[in-house]
Length: 103
Image (cartoon, rainbow, N blue to C red):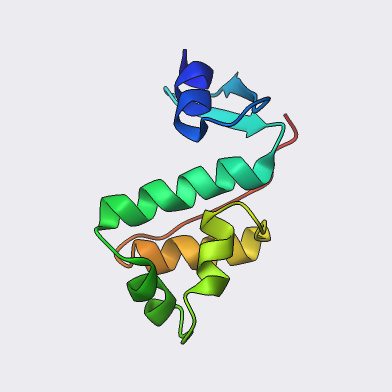
C-alpha cells in the first residue's frame, strides 16, 4: 500500500518502489530510480516547510536556484552527505542522521 502511494505521487511510467519493514512502525523504501524517489522526498519536504526554490537556494548559499532544482527534478542524485545538507536547509530545526542500508 505504501509502495502504491509513493508510485502514485511520483507518477512516472515504470517507476517501482519496494518497501522494507523496520522496527517500531518504521520502514525503508527503495526504488528502481533513486533520482525520482529523492526528488519526491525533497519536493515534499520543501512544500511542507513552505519554501520556494529561491528560498532554499538562499539557505544553501547559492545565488542560482538551478543547482537545488536539479535534485528536486530528479536530474541529479545527491550523495548521502549532500542529501543531509539539503534536508537540513529545508528543516533548520531538525537534525538528520542518514545511513545506508543493506536491505
